[in-house]
Amino acid sequence: MVPVCIEGKKIILRSVDSSDIDTILLWENTNDDPLYGVYEERYTREDVAGFIENQQRYSLAETEQMRLLICSHEGERLGCVDLTEYDGEKAFVSILIFDSGNRGKGFGSEALRILISYAESLGLHSLYAMIYPDNMASISLFEKAGFLPLGAMLYCRKMKCRSIIF
Image (cartoon, rainbow, N blue to C red; front, side, top):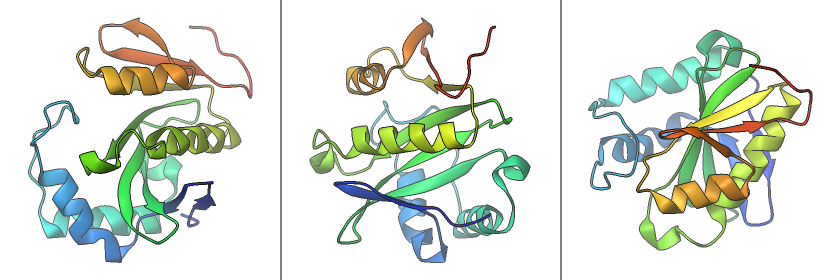
């Protein structure tokens, strides 16, 4: 996959690389916040290294997923955004700002705006997000970015590139 590096006002979204293994391992295996994610799998260093290798070697169409790191302009890793279940027309999006001290500072909303624009450039018709009903911060973040509730925990945003009928 061609590496991605998109600079915003507060953050940079960039492709993962081997220097991110320990950070991603920490993020994936820290389950202190029940509002973060729906998976309880524990990952090994080898799992994360293999994931990163696949991200670098194969296209989004082949892996059906992509992780971009959210970094400060100084290089601090703040979190990540993921596109998963990509099929060329739609994908699921998730976002993590790992350190609670970095939440509420606009990093997540800028990352989501950049990711939406990137997804539109890929020709996606819709983005979906699964959000726990009591995760009001995420619900607010996604609704402000144009996502609409579709049902319990499911939010959708239609893309500008062209419309799709379900």
